[in-house]
Length: 309
Image (cartoon, rainbow, N blue to C red; front, side, top):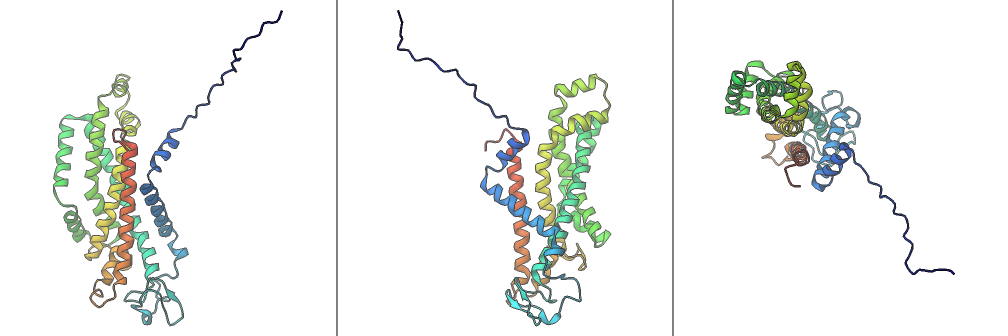
């Protein structure tokens, strides 16, 4: 006798595969979910590429006297030279191709901003970690110096330093480091104070690990997210401050041009209608600073889990 049943036979349930993202993949997906940040990142990478490869992609070396003719001075955008060369963005008062000058100026501006930011970050992070870790009189003394530093306008301190040191790339990097390190120190100290009282620091102290090992191998890695965010914002601030100082004539010499110097070179021609000499370098400076700030804002949102995106 055969017994039949109407109940369907259940198929074996297959375990769904769970895709585990690495921290880098999670960071990448969170960062590029914003179209504004993605666009700013692409623009910033294009600016960095142009700055790095300026000698290779520039139509001319604007600071080589053999390639510059005074007869081509102050030509408008799209005009042709006497040698039948087209200047896409025009020329300045010395007959230099403005697009090539902007490419070379980006090299100096980005180089000064990034180099001064890295040095200031290293100094400020070390000072902030020492203040938070040891506390007491050490913390009080360091933070009073930081408060005094931050009480003065950055451009005023930089002007005084450059008046004493003179012009040059190395001089302006020193001036920018002096006016920036306090921002990093205060940021790192605030983050390190939170981490200082956690269990892993107490465990490392109980194990009699050295102060240097605790500070740089355990405390510093947990303070990196806010440090990275401040680093991007301060890099943009350093670029704008260098451009301001160069525009005022106390920053870089004419032999080491930056975007600020290019803007200053065309300032005297604004009233005569030759706007392009200052306008296009100003646009390049504006786009650079805005793209860095937008990338920094997105980094802040991604690296800080308490902020709702």
